[in-house]
Length: 345
Image 1 (tube, rainbow, N blue to C red):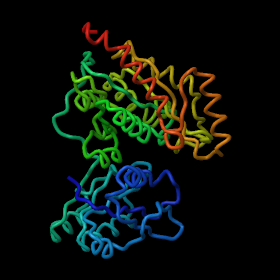
Image 2 (cartoon, helix red, strand yellow):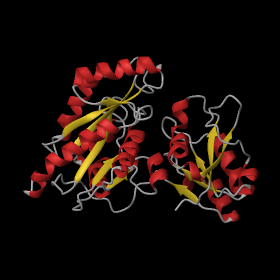
Image 3 (cartoon, rainbow, N blue to C red):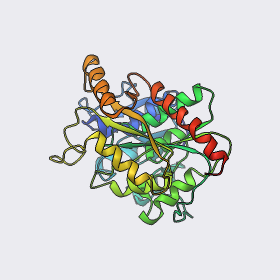
Image 4 (cartoon, helix red, strand yellow):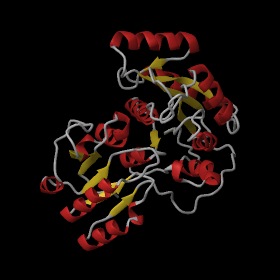
């Protein structure tokens, strides 16, 4: 377990999306976050108290979380130097980057010398099996997206919270490093060998017979050349009963790929439903979650209304308005499927 409280390391990131890991932990586990570490005044901030490592330790921090999420998940020389300083100050280090802490000899030695722990959150568990696609009991919601970093994790957590508030059994199933840091468990599917991706999600969301709901965090996009393989394996392994499509309004291009346009919502939804039918022919769409943070309140309402008219599904911004209407549709789908489940669908 990663020991709290946390100091969130933001490095010198200038792109808001590059600190999405830190932002997610701060949003969903605010009680565990006591400060942030930025390397320049121009770096992105979460509005937490700025602290040095020594100050964080004095305030009770036990772990520094590397809160950056860059392309390829790599550490810079500056990041390594900062983590050495954190270890010497008496902090554990937790990272969700692809480049593992335990593969950095200097960090391993500093952790040993100071009696600290290195946590590689983005490490796939041992013993994973190849997926078999056999239908299993339970009800599953999966978020999918037009692109990376459009709000799939946030929307999944919001739906899980709304279901719990309604007194329903619900479990958030994390598939990315930030979600795992928030939930305390999960499988980092983008670090799983491709043959085992679907099987890892089958293990993450096994058969359940308690009438509860698994809300599975989506990853990537079927339309992103870099990450579509993970998205497809996740779709097959999740065996979702309903999909919730996530999108960011006004995104200029696919993340990290200037010149490649973001696909249309109707096309994205149909392709995801088509792929999901490989393991669940009864899958349906429950709604659309649109990140409208770039828009004014008036423009946000206009965009959501236009998409709703076009797709015939409830459309909400999970941060601005919540997900109550999308959750209504999810609950209705669950109720419609219960007779089929009782009959051994």
